[in-house]
Amino acid sequence: MSPYTSGADADKAAYDRATAALDAPLAVVDLRAFDANAADLVRRSKGKPIRVASKSVRCRALLERVLARDGFAGIMSFTLAESLWLARSGFRDVLLAYPSADRVGFAELTADPGLAAAVTVMVDDPVQLDLIDAARPSGGPGEEVRVCLELDTSFQLLGGKVRVGARRSPLRTPAQLAALARSVVRRPGFRLVGLMAYEGHVAGVGDEVAGKPVFSRTIRVMQAAARKELAQRRWAAVRAVREVAPRLEFVNGGGTGSVQHTAAEAAVTEIAAGSGLYVPRLFDNFRSFSGRPAALFAQPVVRRPGPGVVTVLGGGYPASGVAGPDRLPVPHLPAGLRYDPQEGPGEVQTPLLGPAADRLRIGDKVWFRHAKAGELCERFAELHLIDGDRVVDTVPTYRGEGHAFL
Ligand SMILES: Cc1ncc(COP(=O)(O)O)c(C=O)c1O
Image (cartoon, protein in one colour):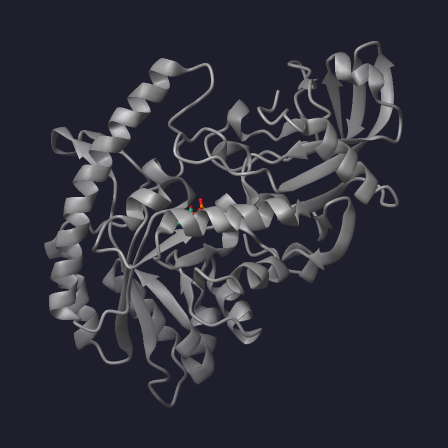
């Protein structure tokens, strides 16, 4: 059951009223919750700008909405094609947070001064620079490419035998970063402008999981140790890179679950965050903040197999990551519905069990929360934006604009 049961009846009534004329399946964003979540991210970042992680939003209208607020600046994008599309549609300061092997995209980037000025690409290996050079337009060097280096943030013990954190950059020591920084600054056609270090094992792992006190305590101990180790290494890495590139423009770090910790590090100039706007269910389990679920989807009740059970259409939208129950959407409203353990949420239909089922009629909506943030938008072409009990706008998702970047 969702933990958000207080005010749940009022929320359900408001969402049902707002969408009374619309048939499910549909997805909504509750703008009051979205704006409150945005304000909370800014409060936690203590004056450091927040770069919005577009993968966790996947809707241009909502990226524009959040970037219009004080405290947000720039986009953290997830593919080169997406970055170029955003830059072409007017977004400035787009940091592509993942290395790319998109040769067509690099050919476009290096041929267009406007794109090259707007987009910064991620590098952690000289081979990535070779790939970019090979894509440059024939007959000239093409535009200077803005480069950001990535630091490995994983927490390691016993000489690396125990390792916590995503396998991302191979660059772990300040010396390794400084060496690659030197090859970037010496190489014509590139400008080193940033450093990024994303501590996903702190920012994306909840430290207060309901019903799991021992696990939660272990996570807290691990995260405290990881934060301490990283703060020292990040500081030294930034110093080493700044010696090579004194005009470094930014040092990006953090994510929704670590905003206040990462912002407290003097070496970090900006924070990345996106999931904290929609607040999907994987972000329920943090001690340091509690956002409001802002993105929901509704599935229609289509049949009633028997007492205590209703079946809704579709609903099987699992999130990426290690497969497990925590990757599933959660039935949110009405409170008190659960999956049939033999079926789970299905490709075309989902039975839901519980006393609340008996109060639902065919045609009613059941409201769900996705496990992750932006992936919801790959299932829906549009988002209905709700203010109170009214739909005030309907805007396309990336998918609705014809783009499936990932
Ligand atoms: C590089 C990077 N920074 C920050 C984030 C945090 O994003 P969010 O706040 O949406 O969890 C992520 C998420 O995966 C990321 O890959």
